[in-house]
Amino acid sequence: MKISSVYEPGGQDPEAPVVKPDLRVGFILMNQFTLVPVAGLVDSLRFAADKSFRSQQIYCKWDWMTCNDLPITASCGMPIHPTKSLTDIESYDYVVLAGGLLSETRDPPEWLLEMLRRIHAAKIPLIALCSGSFVLGKAGLLDGRRCAIHFTIREEFMQRYPDAEVLVDKSFVDDDGIITCPGGTAIDLAANIISRHCGSIRAQKGLEYLLVNDEEIQRQANDEKTGVTELHVYKNAMVERAIGYMRKFMDSPTSLKEVAESVGTNERQLHRAFMSSTNESPAQYWRKLRLEHARKLLMNTEMHVTQIAYQTGFSDASHFILWFRKQFGETPCSFRKRRHDVEKLINFGH
Image 1 (cartoon, one colour):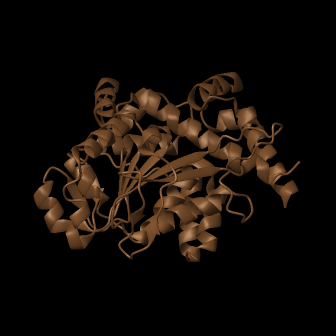
Image 2 (image 1 turned 90 degrees about the vertical axis):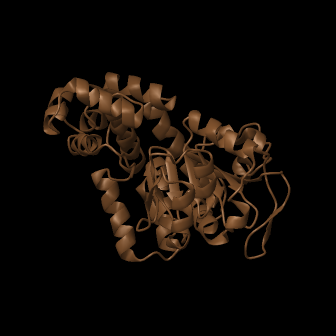
């Protein structure tokens, strides 16, 4: 069997397994977008997408889109042709809006603003690169949120969108699914996302081959171990402290009453705070943290499913399997087997 036909676009091998990517990213490129952050993000995805270095879109997939489905030009003059129409924009795990020159992002069309609002309402995380934050601000999606803005455009941004909380000392900020990145290489943002969906090994692979220094690689590895890979930022300090407590006792049958007491409140007030900040109850949020941590253990260790269940705070393996299937659409064993089968096929093809 021609292994490449399993993964290459247009492959027609009828015996090829259907490979579900761990991460799907749609890039909307604004005219005169800044190339460097887009390149850093997509090259990190490229290294994480394939076990070797053939740049096949296996574990990660991405597409290029433009506002009019026509070729676009980066601010450096490089032309880019779209690979997909905007009609399928809601089929991705993340949607990236790549901005650049302010002349192209100050006054975006109303249809684009409405589309971004619809994407956010569907709970698909939005990433604004460079001046893409101006478009999210115009759509009202940054009101009351923290956002990372480049220092050179801070004053104008603050004048236009005074309800946003501007930070200029962060490489990126994730405020509950609205992610802003002021520019730079965006490699640390990419490593965070890849670690969350594909595991720390794939995140480190990109860091190493994109020549990010050893300290950065170690920081990413440590973050994975401690669970601090989801840098959501919430305005409610009590919610932040509660999440920190949840992460610390990931493997413990600690009750929500104990969580509430640890931050000086009661269960009812904690519930209200979480619903206001995260749109989820404390129980739902904590379960999601545990399931995502369990998925990382399935990807990065050989631990038995029962061990993972106990290590992530579930009462037994059956309970864990039930919730894992509800969250990810497959059992822990099928998830691990699917990934291992793909890796064997890739190794056989090299």
